[in-house]
Length: 317
Ligand code: NAD
Ligand code: UDP
Ligand code: UDP
Image (cartoon, rainbow, N blue to C red):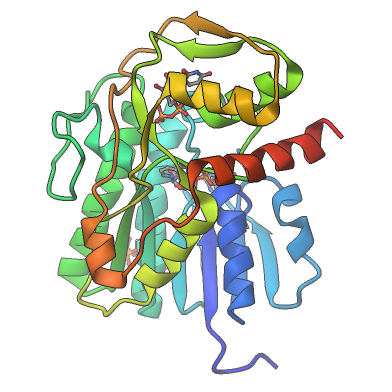
């Protein structure tokens, strides 16, 4: 029989990059973890090392369909995250965010379970305010190619706050800024994985546009620590809460760092900038700092070294 005081936690999208790290950390905390994933961008490989743990269960499930299980907490991460993946089937992307949120909120409502939503800095769109605080309402093109993701996530936030107001659900909404680390997808077109793989292959590093656009990159362990701390905050605290690393770099600087850390002979090649590509992005994390004394601890160079080591072992050993 299961231990009655052990927390049962559902992680949707648990076989993905962030989800697999979250499952790992929850198991370390002695939780029972139910990981639900349709394997669109995630894989069993990401959680293979957890399968032998009797407190871990993996189910194939698409969150656009109802799910009837018994849990105490839910982390809703299911959604493709990179432009290549979420634009592959944009209608399904919106459905995953919106129908997925409705189903998981319905589940949380039936169980009176606390539920966290993995929202995104993309709700700020191409921001007219810099750095972005949680009060900023965003600048999203509703009909552009990124809208299926951005607007889907915005609507999911709306649903979370309406279930909170209307049904008194305990919600936690986090807005995640660019995160990187081991188990990122090798071919999802994200800048860190692209540059690392290109550098390891000795191929040209593809910098889009002039490379002066900025991003702020958070190492995965720091982010997951933020998830866990926020889930444990008092019920009246709902977010939205920015989580990310405020250290801002241009894509050219990132390319140069990765060339140096891999010792690669790759050169930089400029390619056209994709449509609606935000020019600048950096989180204002003062709220997370004040609320739960959280801030990232892994500097970009150290995180990149661990990520490079993962890609080397996995694909170039
Ligand atoms: P990921 O693609 O590795 O993980 C997403 C997981 O969701 C995958 O395992 C995928 O198979 C699963 N999934 C997709 N559609 C599903 C569906 N309909 N039903 C069930 N499972 C489904 O991406 P990630 O980087 O781990 O992102 C996890 C969450 O965090 C996403 O919601 C994403 O929007 C959010 N996020 C990530 C970042 C980042 O930098 N990685 C930034 C902002 C927000
Ligand atoms: N739902 C679910 N699991 C549950 C309870 C509900 O997947 O344990 C889904 C179900 O598809 C439902 C949706 O969540 O349509 C929203 O539930 P809610 O109770 O808010 O509304 P309903 O549609 O049932 O009136
Ligand atoms: N980018 C780049 N080269 C690549 C992939 C991405 O210069 O091979 C740029 C991209 O144009 C964007 C930034 O890197 O300005 C971050 O892109 P990513 O897709 O990783 O994340 P997002 O745009 O969602 O923040």
